Length: 149
Image (cartoon, rainbow, N blue to C red; front, side, top):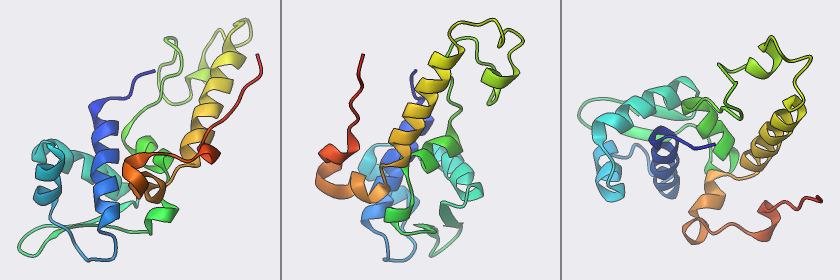
């Protein structure tokens, strides 16, 4: 699985925005310049994040954006699922392909893909924007999982 630039840019932008949480509306241009991101591309991403209830956007003089919830309440999953479609297997076509696939009953790998999807979601749901703002995104050991093979 590979995240698109949309997902990576969304997280980079929102981590920077989280660092300024509580300071009112923040200039989108200021953050895109600091992070080396395309302003037009980020504006498209922010529209998706706005529809998902993650950011507030205001255009014009004095405009900008702000988080609608505290950084401790916004997970990496919230952000990525608002801007990405996760495809765990090449056979996936759309959000519910693992349940809609016509071969679901005879496919030997269905449970593997479901398990992988569940593991990724669980991991991302346990990391908040606040976590990512600490020490340049170094996650603590409680954000790791161990698996028995």
